[in-house]
Image 1 (tube, rainbow, N blue to C red):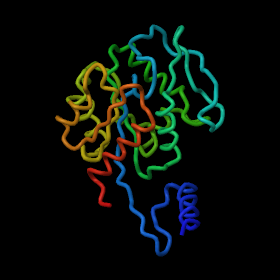
Image 2 (image 1 turned 30 degrees about the vertical axis):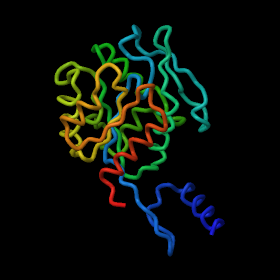
Image 3 (image 1 turned 135 degrees about the horizontal axis):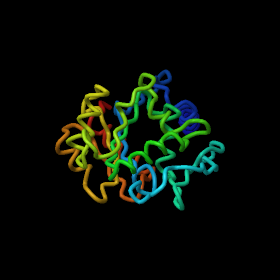
Length: 231
């Protein structure tokens, strides 16, 4: 029995997208959100965009979590914008389609129009896997050229309150109901997680106060499955 369990575990890890059980084996199926929404500053990456004074320029090449060499950072003046390790691991799993059918979105309240421009530029430079930018990953599952899943800033129609602007716009643009969404946010300066949970009924939220840790990624997915799963 121990040997069989070990073989089964290796089989699942080899292809995490598998959704059927081998004969005679009962397996539960996790409920994944249709849209996982990410804050950027102090959640996906560091530093915060409002602290920067230059548009992204030189790419920093390095190891992408053992998956090969790629763009691990981009310089903005004396600072370097980098994805947190836990967020990178989570994004790589999304790139590997571990969570079949789940798409990604962004709800970031960058303080100034210039900060929002830096963020948008960084999305097209930073890589999740060699040759795959964060912007390209965000486009997975949507029609080519679609941008309604990415909302950055607080200039109208956006505001500093994501519950009143970013999330209604996400819902309208993607067609995903609130109970199909999972939201990650550091919530250090303003408790966006609580505001969204209270005002956008159905959204499951998870705080990432130290930058996304992989354990927080799994905790958020676990919360969603506990609320909406059938297993």
